[in-house]
Structures are given as structure tokens and as C-alpha cells.
Length: 279
Image (tube, rainbow, N blue to C red; front, side, top):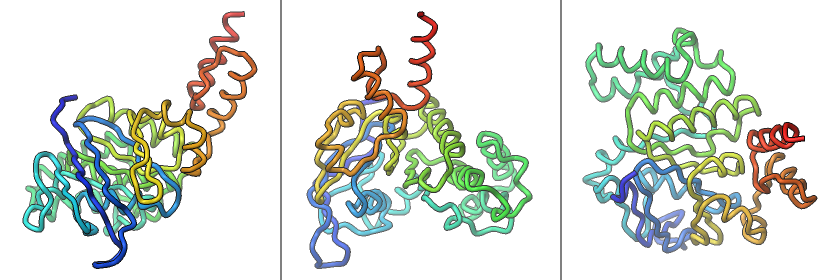
């Protein structure tokens, strides 16, 4: 991870409509290449709107955004969109083709990529996401978790430097969410992507490197997940609900057991296994 920023926001303010009141005010932060950052806040705080400003999907009232050294302007928005891929909560909103394969190569066709290169990327990212067997199926035939992997494969096939996951696990069942988080962790270990997760899920927050907290239109906290999630006043302000693992581990730690007080489910099970093995 280098010190050269991948993303810079400098005093960015946003309004719902031109000339209207700003609902995000003077937001500034820097994200390094390869970093996984969770963006959190209560419903309606502007988290999703904030990340949509990164590639010009929504305009900003004032401020400056720089992605990979390129300042966002009308002239550069195309270059920046090539560097940022977005995965949304509902994968059905991203599907346009009659088959999974059609959807994955849709963006590549728009870039006029050669057929051999498209075929190579299709095979590579379908294998990476474990969806090769679904390539000839209609997306509507897939489960929620399978659809989300297809949507992510379509984004990764474009080989962006930044991947934004906008509530990407929010509509998944527990098994599919666990599988998706494992994929995101693998992406983080690869070091090929800078990751932004807009999320309410505390397990997803704990897996990330850093949290940015938005409240009342301002960036109110910036730190590691374990630092910020121990601030109970901040947790209440952001209306975060601890995961089962976090809540149980905190109660066990308060009872004097040697359990990390902010464990996700996997960490809690590992700590309990070690405790049982030591007896």
C-alpha cells in the first residue's frame, strides 16, 4: 500500500437539486490504494449519494474530487468511470442480457474489446467468482447470492482500480452474505483493488481496514472499525445494530471470559474453541 492517494475528497458538499440546501457538507478524506474503507451512517445520511459523486453519477455543489491523480470534471468523468466499478444492493438493477455471460461482457463490448480478450476475461472472472456453471443461464434463474456474484464479475471484468460496494450484502441471506464477505476479503488480500463498502453490517465493517462515519451531513469519525465500534455514543448516533457475534462476545467479555469484545461470528467461534481447548 503506497502513500499516494487513490481517492481524495476535499470539502465536498452535495444538494439534492441545484441551488437547494446541501445535505452533505464539507466532506474531506483521503483513501490509499489497496485500502478497504467502510462508509457508515443512519438511513438517509447520504452514504450512497456520497459514493455516487465519485464517478459523477450525481453532481456536487462544491469541492474537489480526485481519483488516481485525475480531478473529476466534465472532461475527465469518462476516464474516472473506467477506474471505478460499482456493485449495488439489488443485482437485478444491473442485469441487461439474456444470459449471465451476456451480462459479464456487456461493458467490455461497449469498450470495443476484441473477442479473444473478452472471452479470456469472461472465463477468468467467472472462475474467480465461482459462476462458470451459470454462464448460459438467465440471471433471473439464480439465487440472490449467485446474482450478486454475477454482478461483481461484470464489474471486475472491467478491471477497475476502485470497487464500490453499495449495500452489496444487504439483500442476501446469512450464507450468501458470508460467501460474499469471503470474496471481498480475498479481493483485499489480492491488493489489486481499493474497496469502499457502504454498509450497515457490522461484520462487514469489522472486516474492513477503516471506517468513515457520516451523520447530520458531516464526516463525524474516521478510524479503525474496532476504535469506532467501541464508542457506544457514536454507535447509537449512527443507529448501528451489533451483529450476534459482537453482542455475545461483548457480554462474555463483561463476564470475565478472555474473549475479544468486538468479535465477528468467525472470531467468536475461534476464541471459544481456543478457550475450550485450554481446559
